[in-house]
Image (tube, rainbow, N blue to C red; front, side):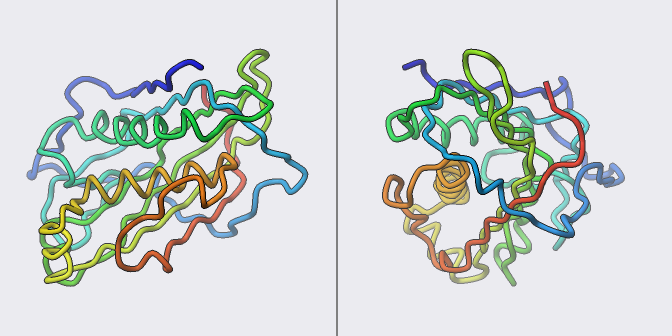
Length: 223
């Protein structure tokens, strides 16, 4: 089986948004009517490749406010190219399914990130919040390129404990990067058909509050 790999479409120089810049949002419109994926799809996939695209027009913010108005807010890595860092998160999560997703149909999963809004330092070490991840998923037959599923939008929210709870997680080794990688692993497994027993649960407080909803994407196919 081929190793999973990922592609980040991030323009050079867009890794860090300066604190003096004006925050604008391009792709964080809320999903008003989440819909489940088509019920007639029988998933038995072997995922031969996962292509993750982080569009360069997504606005990243380094502002340390409670809720920066931006498409990308991420503090789990040192300041740098946030687009590439998030693509690498999906790469790591997807690679964990190289052995578990072994079915009858070889597929390529295309992920286009629409929004990745984590929590800032100020929020994380005070009131806490929610990691909000929105991406478009298209599943294609690996040999013919025909679309099997999608494109559809996946909305996934993970609670972000604040204050002493956040510090306790850090001390236990549950950093933001560890938590989010485990979370994306679970989300991708559910969206591509793996059962809950095939992946480790997200080992953090608030796992019962995990929200994974789906909606049909209304735009065209991303290539």
